[in-house]
Length: 192
Image 1 (cartoon, one colour):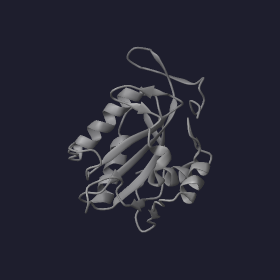
Image 2 (cartoon, rainbow, N blue to C red):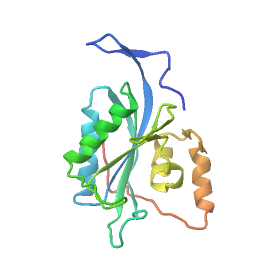
Image 3 (cartoon, one colour):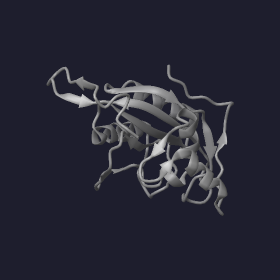
Image 4 (spheres, rainbow, N blue to C red):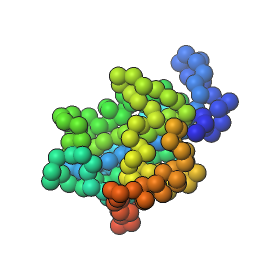
C-alpha cells in the first residue's frame, strides 16, 4: 500500500505551516455489547467529525462470532472504513481510543466483549512496532471479519508483510478451522 491518494500531495497545517503527507488508513470497527449497530454508526460519525480524516468508503456490515473471548460472549457486528488522513499513526490511535472510551469501552481482559472497538489495520505503508501500536495490525491476516469487508471496499487491497487481501481470503477458506463472517444486508452503517 502506498501513501494515498498521492504521496507527493501534502496538507499544510494551518497553525504551524507544517506539511503532512496524506495516507490511506483502514480501520475495523466492531461491537458485541449494547446496541451494536448504533455503536458502529456512532463510531463512524465520530471518525467523520475528526479533523484530518476524510472517510472514502464504508463496508457492508458483517456478523461474526467473537475470537478468543469468554464463553457466551455475543456475536460482533463489524465494518471496515477506508479513509485518507494527515494524522500521524499515534495521533490516529489516540483518537480511536478516545472514541472507544466515549462509547463506554471497558478495558479488562484481552478479547473481552466491548461496546465499541476500533482497530487500525494499516496507515499508508507505515511499519510500527512499539509499546502502544503495531502496524500493520498483527492479526489482520487471520481475521475474516477484517479481510472480507476490507475486500468489499477495496478489491485490490494489499496487507504489507502478508500479501493481497483476496489471496489471504482464499487461504482462510482453505484452512482447517473455518471462520464465518455473515454479511448482514439488513443492517447498514452509513456516511451521513
